[in-house]
Amino acid sequence: MIRRLLLSVSMLIVAAVPVWALQPPAAQSEYVPVKDLPPVDQLPAAPLLVAAYSFIWLAAMFYLWTIWRRLGRVETEMRALEQRRQRSGSK
Amino acid sequence: MFLRTALLVLRKDFAIEVKSREILYTTLLFALSCVLVFSIAFVREGEPLEDAAAGILWIAIEFAGTLALGRTFERERYGETLRALLLAPASRAAIYIGKMLGIVLLLAVCEVVLVPLVALLFRAELFRAPLLLVVLLLAGTIGFAVVGSLFAAMLVRARTRDVMLPILLYPMTVPLMIAGVRGTVALTHTPTDAASAVMWISLLTSMDVVFLVLALWTFEAVMTE
Amino acid sequence: MKKAFVPLLLLTAAMFAYAPVIIAHADYESTMGLVQKVMYFHAPSGMVMLISAVVCGVASAMYLWRKNPSADRVAIAAAELTALFGLIVLVTGPLWARKAWGVWWVWEARLTMSFVGWLIAVGYLFVRKYGGPGSDKLGAALAVFGTANVPFIYVSVNIWRTMHPMTTVVPTLQAGMRGAFWFSALTLFMLYGLLLTARIHLERQRAALDELYLAEEN
Image (tube, rainbow over all chains, first blue to last red; front, side):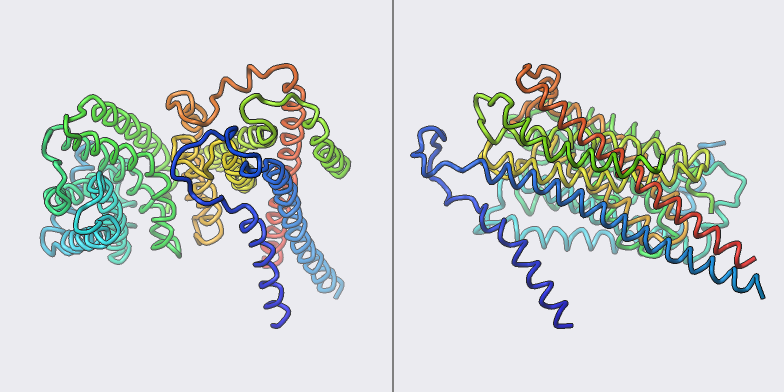
């Protein structure tokens, strides 16, 4: 119970970090082309690029892991059925 | 024969509805409550936001229509008449068309009340080009009924049918709603933008045709129970 | 065939790990700079999403009309992958848009209809999971309708000129970008093929398990 609570809280914090890090800057009152802004105000592109790339890795690995987990469950059931059949067949 | 079956199904639903008017009244009242709820979001200091009326009208039709679909098929399921309908020596597609026309009729009656009311409450000049408005509403309602009747019929036996119908129906009808709202906005423009409205109407019609063809193809295969 | 799966998976992972190197050497785009390089993942993911939606639709149609059970297995696998790659597209796109357009999201034709397509794929998965008996046919009909959305998503950027790049961009890529693009595309297509195969295998095992249960009861 405590473990589940800790796990969910830590997941929330992990999920919140990129959201907090990528918050847009304060709204402008007029349009200014990006190149005219002083360099310190321009959005850095690298974190966005890295976030996109990492997301694909994470998504693909997560999906593969769910397939592996579901497959494991099915194969465990199959083996249990097989054992039951053999036991009742040999009687 | 096909048309006769469809009209027979329509007449049956109409006869049942005329007696109690249960679905009609409750759908209408729900649409009115929707309009009330939307007024909270889309009215600022007593003045409705620009072009809000078009969106409110179409969303009220969609929400009320979803409920009406659920109720119509629930009635069939409750009375166990669905099995009788499917056992009848009639083309399944004709039964589907009959049901679909029933929904169109129900929604049309609701719209007759809803459109003047929305025009009044949100000060929208909806009646500048009344013929175009009627055609637009008809095209949108038919599209909604085509998709909705198919999904509602498919979901009749599903366990979670009440929540699944909106989940499946709303994404599918987004193109119809967008076209309907943008067409209505074009009609409420100060110089009435008839050209845009006609463009949206033709887009709606082509979507209706695509959906109708797909629905007629799949209805037979899906309703085997 | 099965033996080739793990080596191919490792190869795909290696290709994907190497992709940033190739992308870093690709030409910079003039107006968007570094963030444009998200395109090397975003565009192929979009292609895979649309291809997967079509695969799901065709398999569903075959299931509806020929009652072929293996078609149903392909359909559910393709639907899950449509949802997965759709999610990738819907996350990488806004990450690119935030820098390139200044906003996370714009309600224009392609974005809205891609979101709708993703919702339809998720709706399909919900129907299969929570629909109860008969949900296989129900889902199949839904997938057939959802496939009608696909050509619209593809063509929408050419009809409604908005900020989103048009479909002419990919065929006319310059030599400096072409290599990196098709390398990333190949990697993602291979990933799609492998994930699809794995998912269909899972579905086949489930069907075999059901057969065993039925045989035990008899």
